[in-house]
Length: 124
Image 1 (cartoon, rainbow, N blue to C red):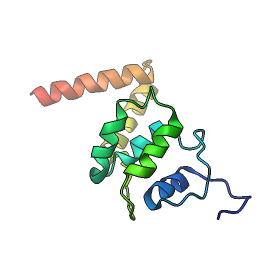
Image 2 (image 1 turned 180 degrees about the vertical axis):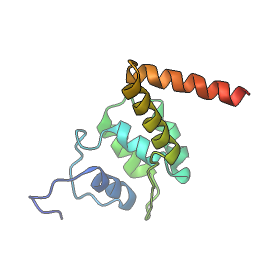
Image 3 (image 1 turned 90 degrees about the vertical axis):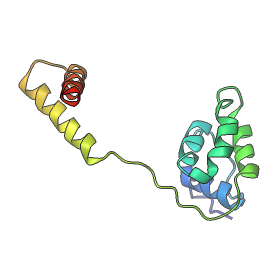
Image 4 (image 1 turned 90 degrees about the horizontal axis):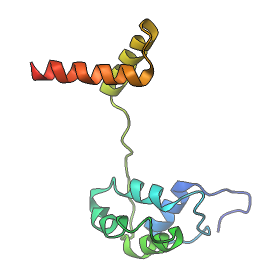
């Protein structure tokens, strides 16, 4: 059992789903259904379970979705890698920042200009 002073986080609730051990009472402020479904959808083996409930997530209370995940997700150890920004995204952010600094464009306008330039370059 968890200590009284420990505060659960999203990963604690994910581990409860994977190992079917209830150490914490579900708290939708920490692990709402949107976050749980988004995180679990990164595992190709779980897509079929997520797909069944995903379209209903806005109509069903979070605690019911959590119970569904507790009983439907197969028990076992999992490693779900979160996708991060790639180097291309970082380069694009840098180019946007340079445009903002050197012109009177806003960040949004600079992004639109860069997207149009990339489309023109790809078309040629």
